[in-house]
Length: 340
Ligand code: 5MM
Image (tube, rainbow, N blue to C red; front, side, top):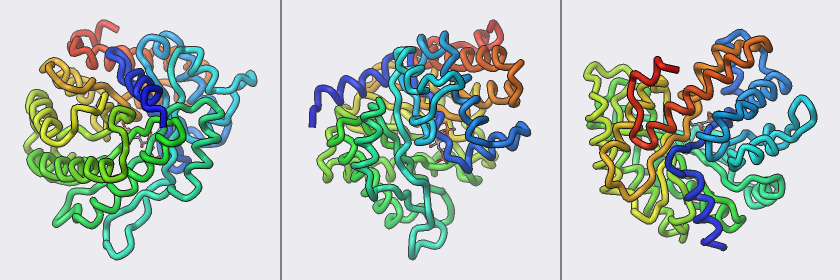
């Protein structure tokens, strides 16, 4: 394992002022996103949408450090025959690949899931590296509910996240480790705090046992939030305070950076909370974004599958990327949202 090279890539992904574009929706998820705007999901429409984002060069060059791709996109060419990975490299960003195969019911656990994809992973990573990928992503999902998540499900998912991370590092690929505590449900912020600490503690224990070099990885977690149907909404400052306190307790300082998922927060909430986290300062890790929906929702709606909307959609994407870049520096204000 070349730890120096892995550490350089990890540091590059979390460069202050830049963050990751998560454009790795699986075929089922992108279909749902396209259904919402009345666009049929085909190989060509998926290519057109993702190419539109990657060709938004102002946003890509200044605010994006890496792009997580679905396997289809990694091997796809743009409309004029240019491989899409080349557009990412030309913008000075790193191509990455989602290598998990999604979640499946966890046997013997009635409503919990396990993420699959370890079979043949080393071979898939070797191919992805050849195509230019320098980092990968694997997501495990945890639902908060009555007695959930169970310690059995937490341990099983933590173990597989750690096995994935070890295999990535041996392939020269930086693992982005994504344990997501979902926002679904009425739970309060205290509950999310407790569960997120348990999950992260189990993940770092498993990473330690699998001898994963923390300097050569990036953590992609949820922020500490309340459930989406919880009545008591926390303030932006409470989210920032709780997120930082929890992470200080369970995330080792050797990890170069944390790149948050947005998890269904509104675009502006996700940005405001990331900004508040960075304004507090004095953190051992860089704190940035690895957003899917919070970067793509606005431009996707603007695009709506019509080529005449391409420039406006790219502008909407650049705007969100710029807002989140400022948030990664603690320099965002809500006034900037409306200045354009
Ligand atoms: C972009 O969506 C990613 C892939 O999801 P599926 O496997 O469910 O299709 C997802 O892992 C995403 O990277 C993270 O959830 C972060 O995205 P959000 O939208 O939560 O920022």
